[in-house]
Image 1 (cartoon, rainbow, N blue to C red):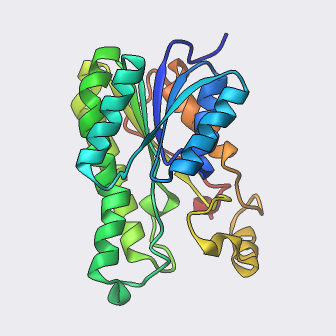
Image 2 (cartoon, rainbow, N blue to C red; image 1 turned 135 degrees about the vertical axis):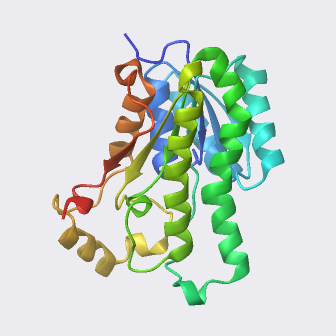
Length: 249
């Protein structure tokens, strides 16, 4: 039996990387998926990939750093599918490792809008619907939610903050049947930063990661599905490390 039959799942940043892999995985497990992305072409490509495998999905454009756009995204999901069971707040961006004294006001604001404010906007818009379905929120956090990185003050700050927001939502809404959890990827093969394809960076990641490799987007998708499923019915307010052992060293 498919784990998400008759469930409606909304995935932000679903046009590529972890978002696409997770949207495909939810559809494979029977969910109706709203694919949301700022890139129309890539988002529609994800929908086409789901349809080619016999799944159900629609696309909606969203700028997750804009509250009105997020509200419209959630409204489009309800209009299309009638309810919402899982909000996967995944979209994010890199600050290209700008150290604190080098970050411009504009870059700081954009990173906070996309990585932090977006999670709040998505939660605020989706929670009234999740209360009705006793659904749940999953957030893409990061190893940077719990440790300083070589650089990247805006990114690290934003990821620390969303880990705290996950815990707060869990505390506030658990009594109403809503669970909130985060997944913390390590180095994953995505397009979030050009550095992730740099040979020197890849070799460094292999050196500091006990599994001696980068992760695949699908290796984040499966933990997300676990957290969203009934198998995790007593799991809330946690952030799950999926980092190949990076933070264990």
